Length: 596
Image (cartoon, rainbow, N blue to C red; front, side, top):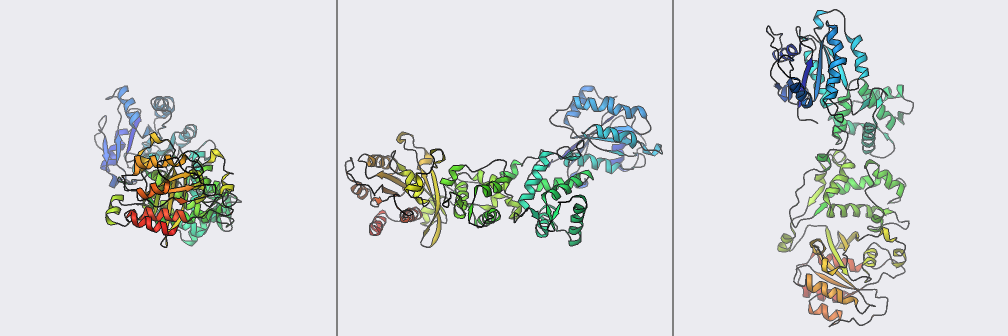
């Protein structure tokens, strides 16, 4: 919503523009009226909408056309004043003032107009019969009002309507010619309905309506008031109420009715509560609330955010199979302006035999997004209405920023729940297989993955001493000369070589010696494709000797060419090492040897 309102009064000389302003300010009709008064600012605390309001007068006698054009361009709303007892001033509304304003305003930023009939105290008849056709002809005319500066009739109302035209404009919501809401308004209200439909049954029951009412207006509806609302819909719409709940059609009908009855501030209150701006786009401040992320810190979802996402999953898992079918996923993301997840996501997280993302996979993908791109996570939570449904100030309330990793190392303990493992290895060494095996996919299932749907990430949960943690595997592109800071920023390094390729280990040894030998990041060597005959590696020493020399655990044998799901023990070891990097390498080495 705008932070202030600028109202410009225009019209023919002596129609009472200046008198209207002076009567508003002094609450009495002035004895002496100047040609023009200077700009007046009314403080926020004395305006109905609690917004500072600037009122600007215009005088043909004191101002040039250029000055008038400048004021028109700066105005948020323009009051065209005519005298109800002066037929010529009424004619000038359509043959001079409206065309003049149209010529001097941007076509894309329509300025609302208020038609103001002053001097109603001088006549017994109303000018509305003449003015209403003008209002219907020009969509930019928000409303018309008759008033009297002399006896103060409708003066406060006039400026309230002007404020309202800016803060709660009809234009973006409603098309007078079609007598219906505009498509963007329908789209926004449809999203709001779907977010508010907490059980996803297509109707808003009494509990959901009351939650919606509290969220938007800070108070629930009384039972009788709730029933009255539904009865209004029942009388006007056959399928507006179903099983005593409000359908989407009924919800949209109610808002159409509010707008038609001049109560569009009700609809705007709802739209703004759910993050929409004056153009019916989701506000950037709503989608991207402030979140400080110091260096060396990571971002995770907190308990409340996981509870919210669990409820979102349950809401859309209609067949209760603990997996998201393609149709269920489309329904879930229907409140987004675009489909946020591509087919690669199915190969990033756990899925069932049909390839559908499981409950665990769903939470894992959100965990991954939060860790890699927290701004995107905030945006996604915004589309789902997190702040409203979880009753939080913003999506940022669902994010935990971890303390710096160096502090974890100093204190020899961590409170983090997500650990990143960067996986290095030469072409064909088995890195992709290692990632997919973490998600429970053996070689047979991996061969079904299309190349264009391949993912360079895999994330799932492991258990370390009874604690559930997320391990994020990232396959690093094997270009030795172009490793970025992001390629090396991780909690543990995994070096994968193919036991059946005599030249595979050399790449791992080079990466380790150049980038990680002197770092504090723990490293583990993976002897992949261990189901194949092992050959001697063409390097100065064997992988086992290399690991001993550099105080690493011995190479861990691994294969994904299994009949059942590949063994996950190796991933628990990786998570443990990532959690406890400060434990001396000798201890890790001895423990790893025992596990083997």
